[in-house]
Length: 367
Image (cartoon, rainbow, N blue to C red):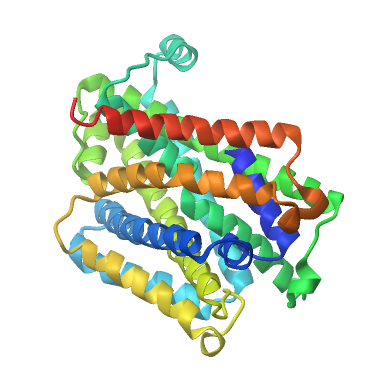
C-alpha cells in the first residue's frame, strides 16, 4: 500500500499533473478513457453505499428514518466541496480522521482472547474457495483502491497550486527532500490506516463472527449484535466510526472522479477553484453524488453494496497498477525520478498479488 501510494504521489509531484493528465499527454486516449470510465462507475456506486452507511449510523444514534437522512447528508458533502476552500476541506478531513480512533478502541471493549488473536494474526487459515477469494479481493480493493491512486496524485498537485505554483512548468520536478517528505507522509498515513483496518477485522471477528453472526444486513444489525457482547460503548463507537469514515470517503470518491474526468477532457479543475471557474469539475461531483444518492433509494442493501463495490475495485485495480508502474518508470514523464529498485519490486509485487487474487476469484466464481 505504501509503495503504491508513494508512487502515485511521486508521479503527481514530478509531472505536475494527476494520473489522468499524464495518460492524456503521454499515452493512448483509449487507455485513458477506459481507465477513467471504470473509475467513475466504481466510485459512484461506492459513494452511494457510503452515503447509505452514514445514514444508517446516524439512525443508530438518533431515531430519524434512514431515507430522510440520505438527502441532507449528500447535500452537506456537496456544499463543503463546492463552497469550502481547499484548506477548509483539508482541515475538515484531518479532524474527521479522529473518528477512526473509535475503531482502534473497539477491539479492547470486545475483550478478545489475546493468545488466539496473536496466533490468528501470524498463522492465518487460508482457503482458495470463491467466498474466501471474494473477501480477499474486496479487502485488497478497499485498501489498494483505484480512487486513491488518482486522489493521491491530484492532491500533490493541489498542494503545489496552493503554494502558488499555478502553471505546469512551475510544478514540474521534485527535489530529493520533497520526495523524502512525501515518503514519510505516505508511510505514516498507511501505518495508521493499517492499524484501523486491523482493529476493524479484530473487533468483528471477536464479537460477530465468534457468535455466529456472519450475515449482517445493516449497521443496526451490527450494533445490536455488538451490544450484548461489548456493551453500549461499542455500538456508539461503531456509529461514530461509520459516520467519520463515510464523510471522509464520499468526497474523496466523487472528487477523484471529478479530477480524473476533468483532466481526461482538458477541463479546468481543482478544489482550489471557485464554482464559476471549474463548472465541469463541480458538475461531475454533483452528478456522481446524485446518482449515488439515487442508488440508496433502490433498496440495495448498503452493507452488501459496500462489499461488492470493494470487489469491483479489486478487479479494476490490477490493470491500473500496471499502468501506474509503466508511468513511474517512463523517463519522458519522470526523468531522473524514475522508480528505484526497491520501489519497483514492491510495486510489481503488489500488481502480481492483486492480479493473482482477481484471476483466482474469476476461476472459482461458480465453484
